[in-house]
Image 1 (cartoon, one colour):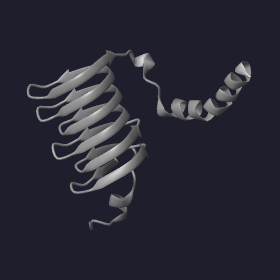
Image 2 (tube, helix red, strand yellow):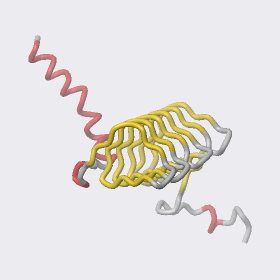
Image 3 (cartoon, one colour):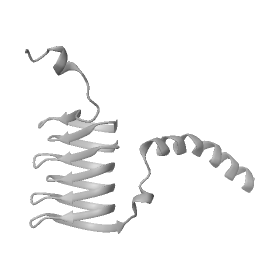
Length: 146
């Protein structure tokens, strides 16, 4: 079968992955429903209900909210994840909130960490619903002080 056969084009949500290639620079906000592997550079926020992998060549500056985070490159910012691993080439500077936090020999962590329970990890769908209600809540709060 060819590379572009129907079987290869069919999307499978459980195995799909986005790759930011080495030499690529992206600035902005990424919201995904699949795994992401970062071999290039990202400056901004990443949100996914799957796994984020920062390879040895990759770097991220910003915040990451995901199910699992694997850092083998450089990460500067805030991480909110169920499972977080810093591998032997990984370097993480910032604030970490995670249920499971592992640092392999050779991995570097500079910052603060907070252990959270699984119940505290909010699915992205809940975050989206909450974000939509915030402006109305702010109006009600402002009315109290007017």
